[in-house]
Figure 1: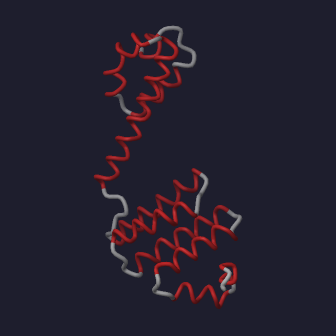
Figure 2: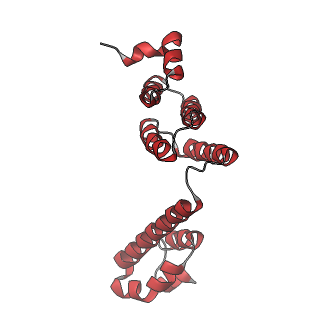
Figure 3: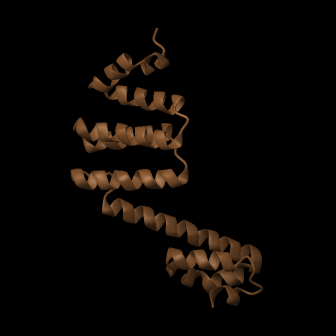
Length: 166
């Protein structure tokens, strides 16, 4: 029987880092998630573990699967997650191994935009009824995220749908 926390000892940790077994990365992620209280330090560990995958030359599919698991285990506050992703993109670009391709990123952006539009349409219907949704649906679905955010803020104080979209 082995306790994962035994691997926090420097000599045991070194065994994990030296291991070619992909499960060692998973174990390291779990340990760091459990024993690290400082979010900045945790961000550093998350980046280091992801970088190890690239250094070991794993296939892209394996990197993506391991990344999803490590990302799930090591949760960061939103502002640090943004910093982490920025550092990761820079590293991947440097290594010429993008984690998220431009096509995947475009799909992510499109999904976010659609979600924002759906929220605005739902709020519009709740506040002004289905006719207002029909009247403004095309304009909302064609809008850029910044415009959707501005309109979403205006709906809070709007007395008519027209005042949202002026």
